[in-house]
Image 1: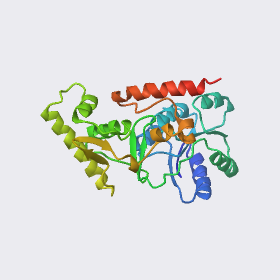
Image 2: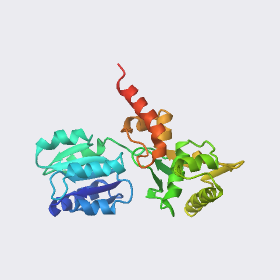
Image 3: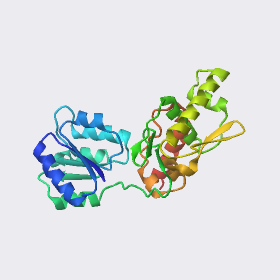
Image 4: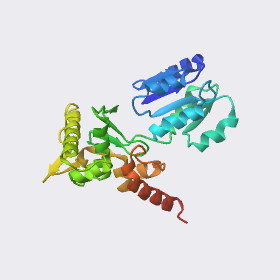
Length: 269
């Protein structure tokens, strides 16, 4: 598992490092005394975050909110010597709460009962996160796009669920203030080329499909939380927290649909 620990007291981190080394010897574990440094170095989804509640500069509650804003499925386990912080932990749906000093048995129990578990990816090489901010991963690593507009175009095609889109549609959604003229159509072609080139370098062909001048994303390559949700996957349904592609305005219609569905699911009976 990819696990981080953040505590301003280094001896606590040393103890946690030893315990995690025993429990999860094949995992990747990172440890920080500075919450801001951890956020600066956050470069891929975290499965579990052990966070001290009381820290100078930024407390663990605020740090947890920042982590889960980017990675909604991160399991937050708070570390503290004071039980009065537990209500705040529950408010942000923490996975666990450990009182210091903690034992290896307690850490292992917290990991075994974590709220979120990584779903099986089957044989789809690209993992797409739509819930929260839009992010794309290959082999657990975030995909680096040459242009942010290329990433935005991919998000739009993902939102369309593989439906083929015309140039006018793509321009109207990712460049809504610009005309669908030859210049802007040329830019869209550059973004589409970027996408194919980016994934080809990662060993994945034909992320974008083309037919009669229209374009769509190859959904057979994607393990996508939004698609799982629509298919009734229990993992995706239980872990949708009310946010969808938060950085893109074109996703407003889908956000409204999900909000309505979320409301109906949580107000039945």
